[in-house]
Length: 233
Image (tube, rainbow, N blue to C red; front, side, top):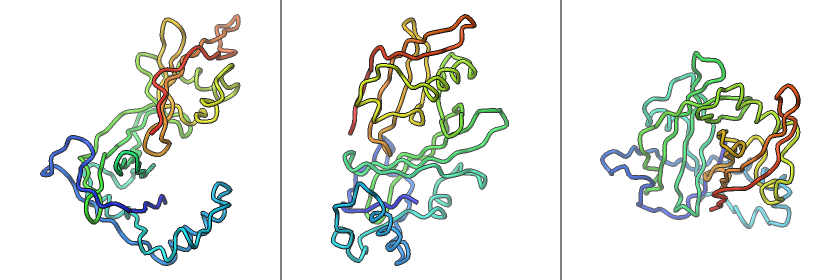
């Protein structure tokens, strides 16, 4: 469960939905058990090794979360079988929040990602209605393939997974692994691989790669050519 600290109660709604269209999801204070678990999580995280957890969190009374039951009852279109994938806020975007559920389909390697864009309001979140987006799936990677067949796009992802991308700049290598792939497109110059997202990861990019093929036209190597639209917020 991702815990969200509400430090600013803003009244601006992320997105373009009007107030009459917005859907309210209440924030719930953490229980003492959840506060203790959150402190323990910070203590076990090497990135927070130099931080005094007690000083940072204190009694935890300012910490909130959004309960699954409240989200499901507020947002239309979520089926009982749908799985919540993420709930992430970005403080740089004035607390803009994305709620994502995964819906199964009857088609192999296809899923339905249901996303609600929200913004902080007093006492919780104001959200737009959920939008559905059909995606291909490989393990925990959900991606668009444009005009590419699933099998061809998957070969690009498998090459990335098994051998990485040759000459990929260090910053991109550190920020984006194969699990961050969200799209694969074919271009005249190779393949354009979309990676990252802004809510949970904070960074996105499109990486242009050139494939090296063997005598059977199978990809043996992906080589970095360029990166387009690399941003972090």
